[in-house]
Length: 324
Image (cartoon, rainbow, N blue to C red; front, side, top):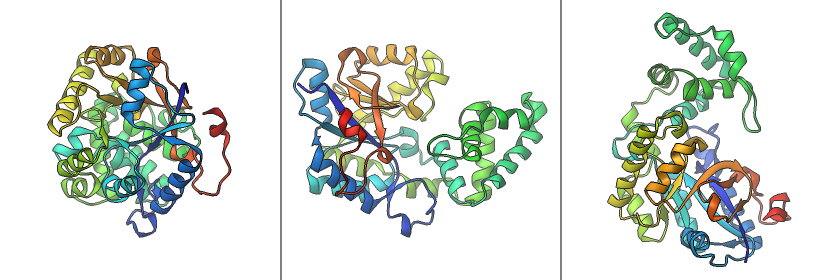
């Protein structure tokens, strides 16, 4: 029996050349097709139900098993991804953040993405953040601008120092109330589109999610407000997860075989306890690796990013193939 599965994580998948936001960090639709062709050549696609059975009953998985996961319920997933999956007989696992769908709000993380995609020189955004910090410094007992920049501006494998600073200070570092204020100011300044209208263009609606479910796609939990769960109290986490389960039930999802995808990859021991209480089957992290099918680690399954996998059907197997 194969005891590993390659779980691939996707966000935006769109025709980038025709997008108003060509700088958005997404996968072009044609490259998605190429990646699917590469995966079909070297891997065996499985469903979420097969993975659950492997964890629950030790049911064998095929060698080089691969599972596709899609975070945040973007309209791209319905218009671009869904038809390709159906044509290829592949199940995708989709994780919608509930409030964005039901209340037509734009997630803070997405506001940040489109702020960044709207500005060529990221220092423009950094300087606007510094102005906001200066204006609210006394009210929130803030540190100096240099303190935050030196602490947070650490480049990673995907983003520059400035981009990481913008993301971290607006997503985590500041008090929540101030994060919301700052993100709204920047969104209005640099994007300039009314939030509800932008939300209706950015995310799938309930009918589209139901349609995908009818075609065999898996719909899981990505929280209600898309918070870093490990930044919340246990009681707050419980509310986040319970409300997302109610949504899964409302759209006809299988609440007896539900799965979790941690927003931002954030979780802690309280999260694991709540998932056990609500009989979650498994949970996906953002830890970069091929996942081991271990029932004792079912809530900490690793994933690869789409950028870790070749996007050319003629590519030779890469390093992750050898680890699968």
